[in-house]
Image 1 (cartoon, helix red, strand yellow):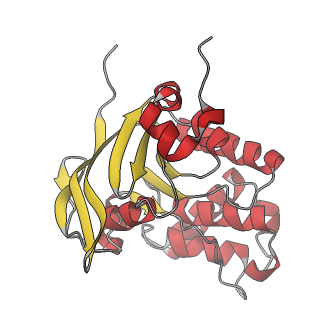
Image 2 (cartoon, helix red, strand yellow):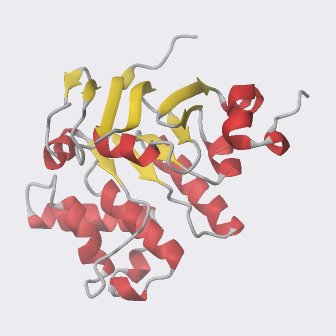
Length: 247
């Protein structure tokens, strides 16, 4: 079976902070229409990798290509306009602004008019099950609602690639399953998903492929089954209890 067309190509991605090399020559290739997971211990370089790809940090070395175009030195808003959007670990909606206006901030990045932005905003609030909350102030949302609003704001930019930094943090098991189902629906809409997640059962179930970082280096990449059986990954991160037994 042929492999889906490449969307994001990261080559020898590197970042140093003084004497600390936070990311060391990481290669990643994310294909269209897949859910790609990025896992690893705290401090392994996952969020730094996201920051480098999205333009929030400057690279020390390496390159990033999106749809075969070099985007390595573009600013975050330029990268967003090309079709990459991201969320953050801590969902911080504007406290005294309505859900609708919070999400509309994302839509205004790509929409050609305010009326188009309002229409897009209604669409993404419907997708994320927040339309009935559109008049609620950001400060009055629950944690799962804040997570979905962060997702809605990113979706409103009409991304081809959606980068999610721990979208399930703080959620209970029922809410995690609801978020997983929402991400599957978004993928079916034609949006490729690149996700950092510490809740292993969720990311293992959700992802088509997974890469593992440890001390800034990629130590493994493969299907969830391959990752679950990889001795280096088990030793560095998963722990013996997570080894996927042979059926």
